[in-house]
Length: 397
Image 1: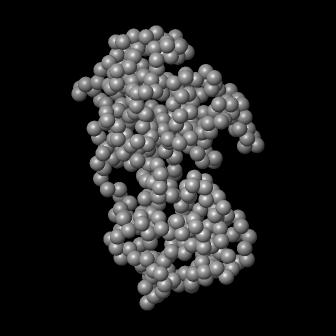
Image 2 (image 1 turned 120 degrees about the horizontal axis):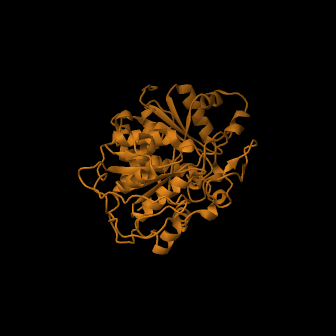
Image 3 (image 1 turned 45 degrees about the horizontal axis):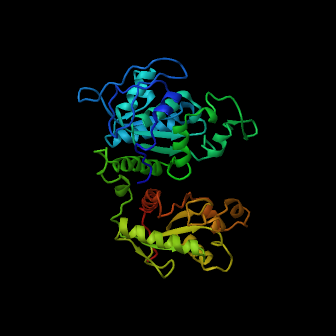
C-alpha cells in the first residue's frame, strides 16, 4: 500500500538510548510489540512524563501533522481545514494549548496516523525530528507529503545529505546554519526518509482541485492500515457535482501526431467514460454536433500543415469552449517522462501572431497528470476539473 509505514522502522533499544535516552517499558504501545521506553532527550537533558494511555475520556486525533512553520504553515492550515471538512480531527501546533515537549509527544501518541510535511529544512529542526522519532517509537503509520516546487521550499534528498539548505542572494542552495545536520540525524529517521523520499510520497499541489484530492488521498491511504477503523468510505468528492458529469457533452480531442498525445487521448476517453459515461467523442473534427474541445499542448501540435493545427484553427473560429492541457517534462507522462514531447510556452510566444496563438495565450492550461501509478488520484481530479470548465454549451448546429 502506498505511503504507509508500519512498525518495521522502529528504534532498537540501542538506537533508542543513543538518540533519545534511557529505556523503560512503562508506556503501552497502540500496536505491534516493540521496545518501548521513557525517553530522556539527549539534546536537552529534560526527562519527559510518560504518555497517558488512550481512553474514551480524553480527546484523540485522526492525524498528527508535523511540519516546519516558516516553510509550510499556510499549506498545513489548508490541509487541516480540508481534513476537518471530512470529519477528521487533526493535531497541529497552531491549534493546541499544550506545546510543551511532553504535550507534543502526547499528541503523537494520541493520533492514529502521523503525517510529515517534508520541506527543505524540516529535518534540521530538533522538535520535528523528535516528533518523527516518537511516531516511530509508537509504531504509528506514517504518510509523507513532499514539497517539490522550486518557488517555495522544496525538499531535495541530495541537498539534505550535504547540508545545503540555505538559499543565497543568487538563488543557489548552499551550506548555512542548521539546528541539526544530516550526520546528527537519528539513524531510524535517516532510514525512513532515504527509503521513502524519492518514491513513496505524496506531492503537495496548490490548485484547489488538486489539494482537495490530496487530502482525500491521505485519508484513503491511512484507512488501508490494519490499525485504522476510519476513512475507508468517504462521501463522493464535491467535484463530481461541480463537474456536472450528467451533462451530455460531445467533445473533440486535438493533439499532435505522437505516441504521447495518443496515449493521453486513450487515458482521457477511458477516464471520462468512468466518471461521466454520458459524454461522447467526435471523430469528425469540429463538426456541428461538437459542444466542447480539449487540446493537448505538446511538441508538434502547432506544426504548420499538421492535422492538429488545422483542427485548432477550426476550434478557434467555432467559438466553442476549449480546455487546454499541456505536457511538462518529468514523471507525469509515461515511462520516459515525456521529455521529448514537452510543451514549451516560451517557444509559442516567439511564433508570429495568430488567432490560435491568441486563444492559447488567453486560456489557462492545466498540467497533464498520468492515469497510472501511485498518483492516479491526481489524474481523476484533473479530469473532473476539465469537465467542470466545460459547463457552458454552444454548438455549431
